[in-house]
Image (cartoon, rainbow, N blue to C red; front, side, top):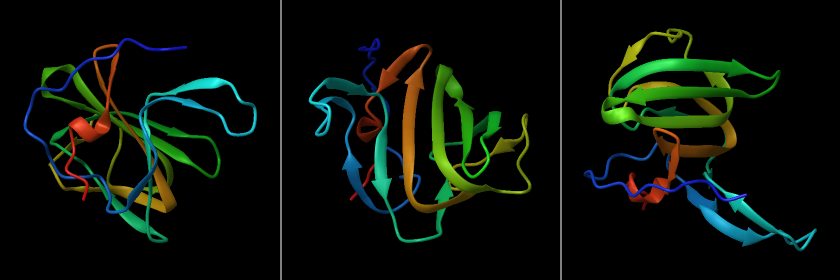
Length: 133
């Protein structure tokens, strides 16, 4: 599986969390099964219980809960979406339809964040969008 890919042409913005990228965007060979897999997100390893922030202003369009982990979708201007997965908590003030500002706290992660950026139905390498040192 390989999704349609878009290129981000805007100005880079803040990262959702500070940390180190441990899984990159794109194709890789699974070390266990030795098959080619396509990853349309990045995984950022963080300090325990790290705060996650919105990378841009936007509107919350989805908050999902699969028991222990939560996922949040934010729609930004120009049909750009940021997706925050593997959250242990979502900010209690957020609900579907909430407008949020760049840098606003959206939740917390245990020790890693799965982060994805899309444009319409196309994946974008999140490292094209954020400044992660």
